[in-house]
Image (cartoon, rainbow, N blue to C red; front, side):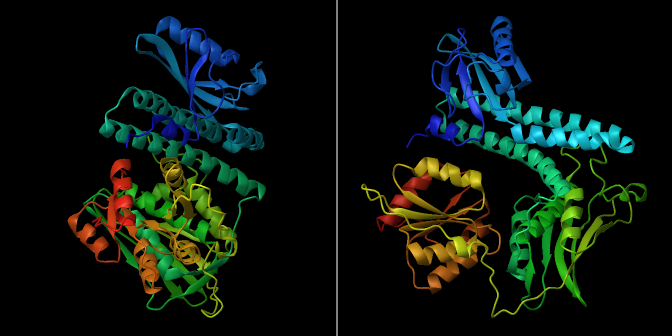
Length: 488
């Protein structure tokens, strides 16, 4: 199976197009029409200059308010990157456009808030410039590698380019989400979905995900309670805090140990993330939870991650802090939450149990139903794009949903991500097998060591596929499993 370039590009949340010297589009990934005129003045000027000087342009601000043709390519507010290329002798300019309309409106509100405080005005103004600057690099990567993807038939290069595009698109979303989360917090619109979770399982899933991103010289440890605690809280927000603290620990611990866990202390739970990394000087500890503060100017990010953590923990009724003995002596980020335990008999630790998707009628072509357990929306969209003509996918966001949907729909096959929140792929597969279901289950994993592969195959899986996914290998394994052939 050849990878379909257009299908891959259509899965991106970014508009990509190619424009000829007549300023007409000859390709668009999912917005606009072939042959459409480019009339938005800023974009038009940038493309004309790119053709004239055979060069690139970056971070051009465009707006539908200035687009007389009302093109679907042009969002209310956007940033455009372009590059001059020649394909089969035809001069073209490839353009990538990211919709920053919501971010633009939030930044407008933020700018108005900044004007109210003279004391912080200089720092915040610098932060907005930093955010704009940091959007430029990933935008340029998305634009450049989208062009390269269209030009090559080499499968290894295709996979490499798609991975780069995904990584940079995620970085763009991460930068935007930090700003949006803080703006929502300021307006009281940051959502908190409360439910009951198994705290041990929750913490294990968070640290398992962190373990995938550390170097071979760093060890991640998880300290859990001796008995299961069913905590009533907002798990998405709690997970956001833990992931942020673990990501910081990984970032600043190139070699050593990272330990995450919790302790029950009287009427509260004490959470911690300790590392043996570069530490924080005493003079800087007081600044770490301030908005837009960063220790070094060359750091990537918005300087909003820890302030957002502070906002979340205080909203949940707790406190947050940090301790460090100084430079090169590690850190201990900690926070507390009220101990709100509910009986295990009344717990509802399935975050989506009440709104599981309904099974729609099968289409006339009677495509096989497959269950995809995947907590990353972008990865699931890629599966949808790959399978739309050969399988009918249903989606589980975590291990708990995977078990419930397997029981409800009895799919022909399950693709099971190993590291998921609330319940990992191992535990979900075990419960599915214990329920008497014998459909093929393929593990999707980023692990690469032989011991990891052996562990996967000993836990009830029929096969495994390593990330980044090779579409041909994946579909071949799925077809073998569904036809009853050995697929290990």
